[in-house]
Image 1 (spheres, rainbow, N blue to C red):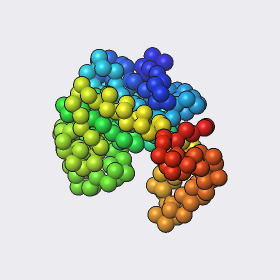
Image 2 (image 1 turned 60 degrees about the vertical axis):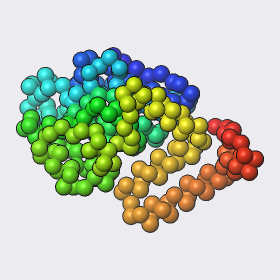
Image 3 (image 1 turned 90 degrees about the vertical axis):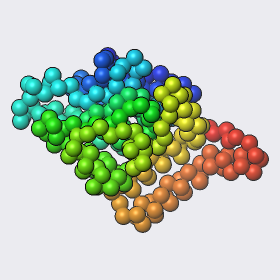
Image 4 (image 1 turned 60 degrees about the horizontal axis):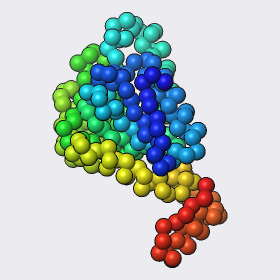
Length: 256
């Protein structure tokens, strides 16, 4: 892969996008993001994903590569969506928790990459921008904002004005979990990722399955469906180990 780098640190897969100067997303970037997800999903050592931009790039993601757009017509635009629609929905339903450390501006598709993560930490000097309406195309961000319970009126304002969304405003509406000093962002995100990675791998997997399913179910059906997963986990030795560790006042030692 030319534009992504993956390293493993204590069961955390650190996924960095690197396409200077601003991590603009080309057709090839989408293709490689799919490859990166394949690699992480199939790596048993990786329990949690930390997704961020390379520190030497000006933006977390500066949006779509507009050089490619100048050549698109109706048919070729639909073909571009073929690869996008294979990658982005998969990111939103990835079977391992994804923490996004937003270390620079997130623009257009960069906003989508952050919204589809499970947990978002952002540097206090970044901003979000949804410029699609100023490029004469339709933004597809509203359904993603709804996943985060951002009020429709707020999300529509952001989309229709294409103005900069400062990180404090994004935090107020739940778009980011936490705002950090830029020099502390990566370490805080990695600390959080490692804490989650210490949990039972099976419990993490079934949580993600249950969470994704709950988005398309009435709450009572999702609630009852979670019972099935809890029953499967209860029969596993890791559940017994978690309870035993609680009584013995020690950290659990899970075996996967």
